[in-house]
Amino acid sequence: MLGIYGGTFNPVHYGHLRTAIEVSEIFALDELRLVPCSQPAHRDEPEVSAVMRVQMLQLAIQKTPQLQIDTRELERVGPSYMVDTLASIRAEIAVDRPLFLFIGTDAFNGLSRWYKWQDLFNYAHIVVMTRPTFKPETLVKFYADKLVNDKHSLKSCASGKIYFQQVTQLDISATFIRRIFAMQRNPSFLLPEAVIEYIQAKQLYTA
Image 1 (cartoon, rainbow, N blue to C red):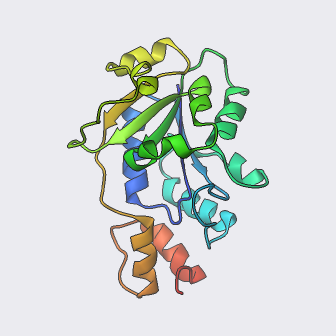
Image 2 (cartoon, one colour):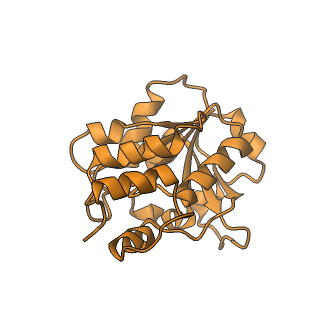
Image 3 (cartoon, rainbow, N blue to C red):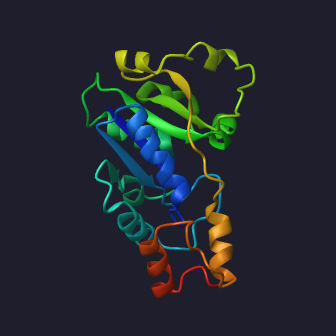
């Protein structure tokens, strides 16, 4: 089974990494790919280059072999659309291999604004990573028809389902981390030390 976890990772931090490790273990994934976004469709383009964001990811996961980096969105021109990413991955793997797209609750709440969002289910299952206190509201019929309550049932088909999975969500944001660096405060324990050293050496997020 293959998992996909996208984001700008600007910069990558322990909030990303903790949830990535947890879902990798919970779903017994063969591989979880972190997919850095080049140009987000719904927000400003990151001020740090794609190359640097990938280098920070590489430093962050260098001792975590179950996490891999997939740079296909950086190799495409224009906005990054997850439906295109999933379609290209699906074309490369076995048709019956389960594919999981992991998203947070904020992304789920805005999913209907994603490009061709309904087509996402043609290529993957969607797993919404939630806090232990999260209680989903009554789901619209489109989601309710696809909802499963047993994660093991996701293995029986390659795509098309939605599942809510509790994870340990650390209250860390990349926006806050960038502010920490801009104010020249200590960012320790928010992101890996190797990433901190990289950011300081490159003098990123100083403005």
